Amino acid sequence: MEYVSAVPVPQPRAEAAAAPDSAGNRRSLAAGLLLGAAGATVVLLASGQTWAEGKAQVGGGTLPLSADGQDVTGLPAALAIVGLAALVAVFAVRAAGRRVVAGLLALSGLGAALSAFLGASDSGALDEKAAQTSGDSSATITALTHTAWPYVTAAGGLLILLAGLLALRYGSRWPTMSGRYERDGSPRPRKAPRAPDPDRPEDLWKALDRGEDPTREA
Image (cartoon, rainbow, N blue to C red; front, side, top):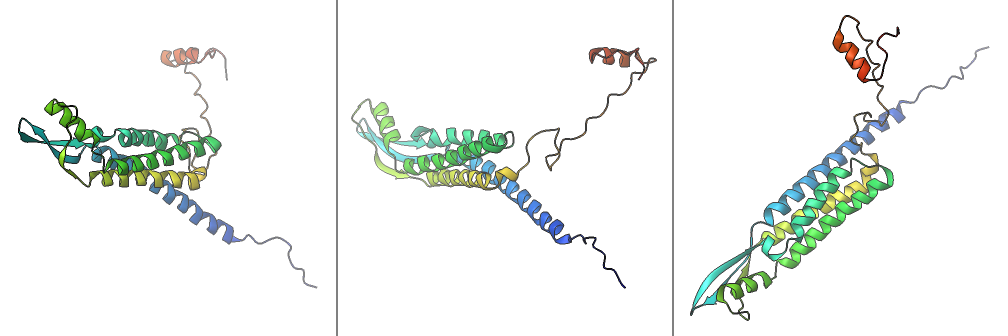
């Protein structure tokens, strides 16, 4: 009579499925970092460019004036800095804290995009410059034109928003910044301190600094 072995045969499918999942986590991590860093860079650079131009009436003539993004609104640049800090903090916290920081990252991107979009049609900064230049508080800007830089700033804010959404969706699978942990989250084994060599005075001093008795035999 033949007997059939009851030993279960290992199934390679589970191991094969884990590899794509790990690769997907790495892709989402790389995408989140790239989008967040690129978005913050775009916002900071574009908010320093000229957003609006016009002319002010001064002494019977006209004086050309311009306003950059910082003159119109400093909110996009400030939120971009907050987004950068949140992007780094995502890797320093775990569990619920990571979701909170990821939400802050997304909100900072959304706020930067909205404030830049609203500033694209703003004329208040140039009106203020016209009043200061002419000495007339009621003076306003004429021949007002706007550039595309506010919309570039808004696009950078949307990139930060996408990075935040990725962190909310996949952040729980991303590694944390800790030298004691491997990529899979398991603690790294600590190296046992080397026994002090009685012929090396520096080893004896190091043992004393650690609170050890260098005369005690191992």
